Image 1 (cartoon, rainbow over the protein chains, first blue to last red):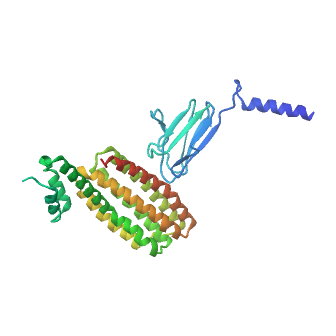
Image 2 (cartoon, each protein chain N blue to C red):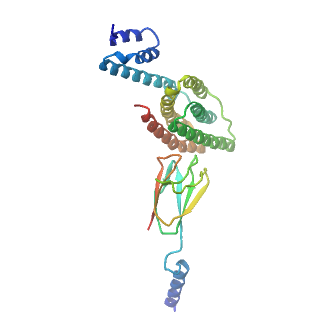
Length: 107
Length: 219
């Protein structure tokens, strides 16, 4: 009986956390902006996942695709956040402080 | 009679070295190539000396007070706000005098970042119920900054960009040295100390950026 309930929970859980194609539900990953760095500098996500940048630094930053600037955040002031859904990999940097760089890898 | 390097060096000893080098540099079209090269090198060295002169007082301020003056937290808060405001003022001059994209973008960054640090420092002192207190170091910084600002304002458009970015490199080195060597070790309040520690990466990024821009004006 216990094993039956266990299998049932497993099946229900799988149905709850995956869509019809069998992929995991989209998730959110947080990148902290602190001390003039993106932490972590590289995140690995699945297609459709969301990356949230949270600015814990003293100064404003932005997040801009590199090298083409095909997308960019508005200014992210201290204490504020910005998020974006990713379907493909992307390099990015802070256009205000261009030594700050990061990478999104979509598996 | 053709000019010689010896003649020119004598001239340099009688007055303003800078103006004479500029003067002769404009008249070297008939000089041998070897002498032209030497003169240009002398002019370049003189320009470096001028840049160092602007910053020297600021560097001295960092070392003079580094060992002997004990600051209280209200005095440290005053120095922190003053040091940030000074660089905003330098940036304002740059925005007025320069049309170079590297310089104006750097100046924009200085304005935004240092204002942001001031805002957070002011918010912290309000929270702590501390009133920033003027002191010998903050007054000395202000006094020297006024002199530097005057010097920058007198620069020609051609000379301003290099003078500004040279000063930014020296100024950030001096401020980093003061924050690391004096303000952080002497601050008593943990939140004030943490704020100062958090400022350091910003200052170091500014220095790195200023040094990158400086290289473009060394040619």
